[in-house]
Image (cartoon, rainbow, N blue to C red; front, side, top):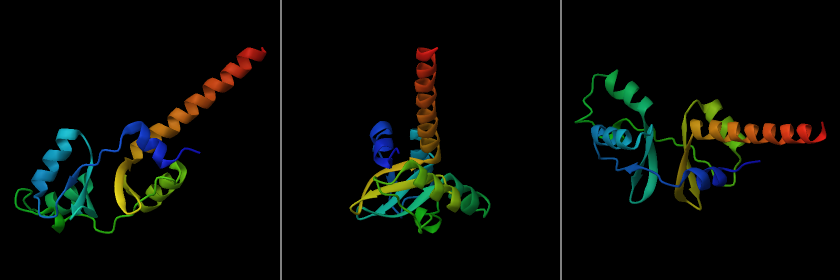
Amino acid sequence: MTTIQQVLDSKGHDVLTVQPDDTVFHALELMASKNVGAVIVTENGAPIGIFTERDYARNVILKGRSSANTPVRDIMSADVIFVRPEQTVDECMAIMTDKRFRHMPVLHEGKLTGIVSIGDLVKTIIDQQKFTIEQLQGYIGGNA
């Protein structure tokens, strides 16, 4: 079973963060510059929320707010579910599917050590299946 730690070791541990008083516009600029769909909101170095494209669509655009004047704290998701590095990809996928979100921060001993997306997990699963298929093909081909 592949762990979240293995996913992070492969993709990297970089986590984009913003402060709660940063504007939504600033967060969107950061997300666009790095081509990501979420940033973690931190205060005094501790994660207090997550801001995603979905938060923007539902809480800024649809409510007629201005991204230049709205602080991230007003629209971020504060009830963030975290995953631990030792949890498996399957466990994380089940949580994300059940809770219907696409990004999950990774905490180790209370410290933010990464973030995984549903895309990261799907890629990992596809890579695992591809490896298994190649191994089976090699086994079948070697015995034919």
